[in-house]
Amino acid sequence: MAQLWQTLTEVYPPEPKFTEKDLPDLSGKVYLVTGATSGIGLELARVLYWKNATVFATTRTQTAFDQAYEDIMATPARGSHPPSSGAIFAVTMDLSDLTTIKPGVDSLLERTQHLDGVWYNAGVMEPPEGAKTVQNYELQWGVNVVAHYVLNRYLTETIINSAQDQPAGSVRVVWVASDANNFAPAEEGINWDDINYEHTQASQFTKYGQSKAGDILLGTEFAQRVTGTGVLSLSLNPGHLKTKLFREMSSWRQTLADTFSFTPRLGAMTLIFAGFSPRISEKDNGAYFVPWGRFGTPSAKVQKGLAAGSSRRLWELLQSETEMY
Image (tube, rainbow, N blue to C red; front, side, top):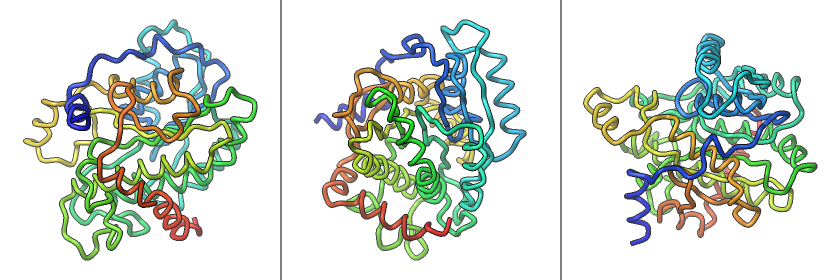
């Protein structure tokens, strides 16, 4: 019954109780957001910048970054007091090509050796059937899961070092999943025998659900691996939102999705809660959150997978597959 109630409130969430106005001044703080040029990533970057933080925004193209930058400069976040002493920098990488991640990270680390928080937010949903990454992963799995795993591997040392002179639990890594993890395949959320669906038939939404289950597993596993460092690793469902994530859907499905969707700003409140809420402490490492900033639980499938050791299994699989990148 509790899971059913959570599902209903994920579709129609209560008003957020922790928003932009609850954030302190972020002068001197440094953050990384993937997928920061549109949707909730853009709204999160807007809030961070207007709270005087330095924001590194991943982008595939300079044009996309420039457009996002102009948007943020033109429209301050709610409750902010211009001007901002913050800054926004582009980190160019294409998450559908793992070879672009290291150069992007190198450019980031040339500017900063410190990160107060990271949101692995970029994602792909229901691309055309058969869409693949450059490394031949099913596109949703490759972008949403594999690329963020590789990026996190590159950033782990910096993240842990950044937490050493900060209050425990204040440096946080947030893995953006979705309530689509309820529709992940198999009993444990991952189609282990054919993760890339090379021999198995399934809908693109099922594959998307698997990728979001994968994000939760990575968030949980990373939490275990950084226990005692002061870093928190968390995952969440940001909510149903009117973003470009639906761009590959048919027009009638986009219309239907919009009927049950909310503004990207509200979704960003879920990310802000996970990234900053003082209600979250070290004992909550590995926790999962739901809109617009509430403690929740992932699907029964994902919970079963976690109990069976799926998070470690996934981590070790990706480690072996991506070592060369």
